[in-house]
Length: 572
Image 1 (cartoon, rainbow, N blue to C red):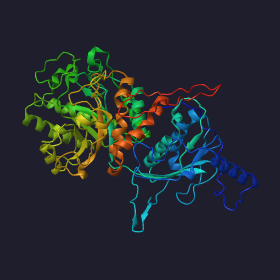
Image 2: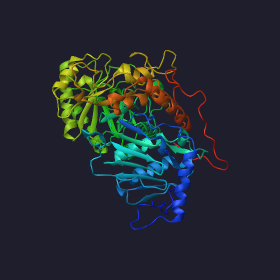
Image 3: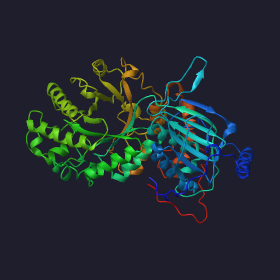
Image 4: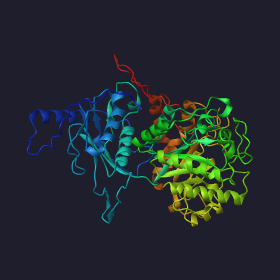
């Protein structure tokens, strides 16, 4: 999130071909000729068209068509895409120092790219196809795909939805020099490599999980994590809101959950919780960036904080002491008491009402002290309660033995790809989100000497996070049953935003590429080279990251030079 000057109200320069009957004036022709002559004398763009992470589906470079963003550039947008255009301008203004006015206007989705330095964003209802050969064309780009065209005189992003337009804008952001992520104006030639990208995601669900229960993270930290997800085209943020160590969301009908259960965390810290206004702010901020929040209320286990607040929910009706350790599997709500189900209905109902997205996560893992038949009956009843709110049930794969409800999604976090119980649940209609613990659990250490994190699922360096295929990872589970991928970050040992970022980067972009890019683009050697260029971007943006030896980071990353007399913008 960046605080920048408001866009000027005057409109940007008209493209020469946008006004019917107008003949280009001599001054217009001279300016265009000067721009093109200058481009011929300048070096190529420092970023290649194919350097994007996640890898696009199709990349067609045109080295003769590099575009240079200049101070008189403007962004023209069809009205329905204005929100994305304003975000693009907000990303680019601080480092470039350019006003980049956003204007409404005619923005055809086909034909020549408009001229005179325009960035054009347009939503098109027409199918977006690209000829492949004489035999046919690629399919339409769907709800999140986009087409990006860069010529020497302008840039156009076309998509069928605002989400697709947003993803295209994120790609354009990556095609500019790394200094574009700086918080204040820097001296730089803002070149974009020429050519065309046609892109769309492999899986519809691409996400990360932030555990705010073990250690609490304030709203501003969560918003910054949302920005990190959006940067790499991840579209879901799973918030682990409740656990033994803390209850992190206010529930009006059960106020002590947050007031009492929210004041603890691992290690005895102060904890904290989100008011409903806080949660709405997170949800709205994420939606603005085309990220869907998936709230998790973990049941029937991992509930010690709830039992401290309301002992009547405990099997023995005796309040347990607050818990600030890291053991699991010892707590659970009483599955034999009807008041437990009233509690579930109230909490799930309030959280569902606050959450516009389609998902509600029930947890369901590590309820070790609940007998199998009792656990299954509890889950089946809880699933029905969630379904009654209109939400789709998501749960950890321990839910697999329970009866199926329509649309149910299991989040698989195992370490052995041979899981007959989960495969059988898929046969009954379940879909899967893959989060293998030994591949994408981002609380695992990179190496034995990583100062924070765990190693129970093994050490996970960047290559291990990248080098697997979600479509074939589980035995007897077809690729069409895989909804997508998610990288969880548990926070028993993670206590600050800087530590969150250290564990996310550079592994988060690796997982993002697995979720977005076609399998045909999967190549570790190519990925590590593309990823290397992002270190300078993270440095410019003030993002903490692990300088993994797996990645050939530039030996001397470019440090943006602030222009004399400029002031640093306030960034988040």
